[in-house]
Image (cartoon, rainbow, N blue to C red; front, side, top):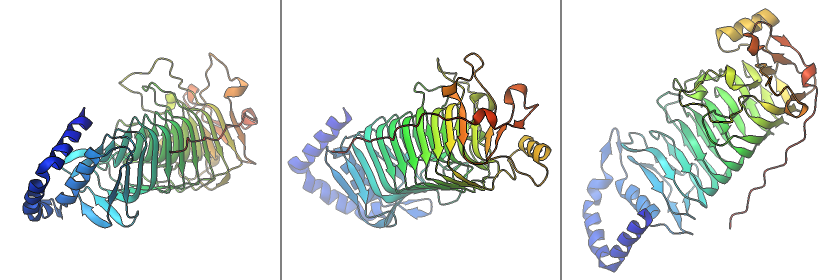
Length: 420
């Protein structure tokens, strides 16, 4: 309905009102372009022009934003399919939403066949880029960041496709999100590659998503580097994620997530974290110097994010079929977050010791048993697995590699549909 209304407005403009409106805009331009919100002048004319283009867009439309550093005071929105929004380059077109007064997101999209590329979005009040319920989504060479550094008041998500299908995020960057820098939720067939995530609570998070490949990324300086989660109150359960050829190091940032959010329970110093997800492969990564543990495998029971919104019927709280192999681990585990983990480390490994590279909370589905296809398998040289003995209130944690000396069937690569 909205597209029809905007289409009618566009027709009226073209029918004769255009010159009058242009004259009016010209008369107002001096005032609009010098509008002030907070300490920044607002490029009102450009903001209006881009939003009008987004409202009038048709399949195949390409909307270009020229090079420059622009300050907008309200978010942009798109509801038309088949649109490309592009800047002059990641370092050349910068949209700042500092002092944003309307619309929580920098850009929100309810559309399919959408491409966003070649620009930077800064300091949005809420999420930087949210793409909701579409398919064939491409985000390429896009930077999102909060320039004041890590703060709880920063927007939750940087690049945020949710309930989407056939998604490609590549050559992009995210800094300072108070939840996840790059977050893909409740989606299917996803590739995240050659991106950088830094100073976020979660660097890259794949949540309740089916079939995802996460590779050639750098996640550093976050609270947790790469997370693969299944949340309990969402209708789609995730499985089938491959995390490989990434650099995941020094994710030791203090957790600044808002209280009550899932990521607020992620310990600082977490490299790759798998929670209540299944069929996950972690291979051929460089994972180093994450001070709690380089890899954490956990169940819903040890997360601390028990939810008031309930648990979806059929929700599986256990991690299943997790395969860790052929990674290059270095350091880490030497200064875990929280008194309990610090005590655990000291008791088991001494003041100068470190937790093993793989930390598992120890929960197993006792009703089903630990069948072969559900096991946590580790084929990674001489690294150890610490069973924290969560089901027994962590009374008898121990290194026990034998149950994890196993193999799992390998997952197939994600093949995205080509864009036409």
